[in-house]
Length: 205
Ligand SMILES: NC(=O)c1ccc[n+]([C@@H]2O[C@H](COP(=O)([O-])OP(=O)(O)OC[C@H]3O[C@@H](n4cnc5c(N)ncnc54)[C@H](OP(=O)(O)O)[C@@H]3O)[C@@H](O)[C@H]2O)c1
Image (cartoon, rainbow, N blue to C red):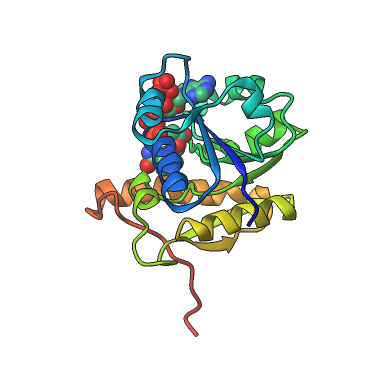
């Protein structure tokens, strides 16, 4: 895989895990940005891992931008990425996903960023799995998009990060993969699995 320029927008629990995993398990150039210029979470990643702070110019010239912000911030992110024409990976999950006809975060981003190629991925797992997915390919990463070329890039990235990349079909299916993320939250808390729970797709025969 060619060396990519990847920016991670949102440097909290999941964004930090993604930036750390990309840094540790790939040789791509990683840039990070939090909500504000003096974001503590972002500074921590820059100081500890020597990642670069993502300038506006870096965002625009990235091959891939991960969006890992609270769903309420997607509108602000759409303004930031308005002129961006590359691949956007939607990782945000709303607690209300699928309820009362709520769209997925991936579809919300795609509607507000018509010039970008939006891919839904890594929404069905906790940050703990992103940090340590266990034996290679044990945990599935469901990848959805209306753009096959973008889906191929993010599937290859998922494989490089140690996941079993699953073609999740069109972006309309992101709703289900995001709902799996909320189900992972419920299983972790209500059913006692904890944050290391993972999903894997497989054929019984
Ligand atoms: N945590 C998980 O295990 C997990 C797993 C799958 C999906 N997700 C999804 O990922 C998203 C983030 O979750 P989280 O747990 O990482 O939340 P979090 O720990 O609260 O972090 C949110 C991050 O978003 C940043 N942010 C807010 N507005 C922003 C903006 N406009 N531009 C750039 N950055 C902005 C914040 O920056 P500051 O640090 O500067 O405030 C913070 O770093 C959520 O939608 C969640 O559903 C989380």
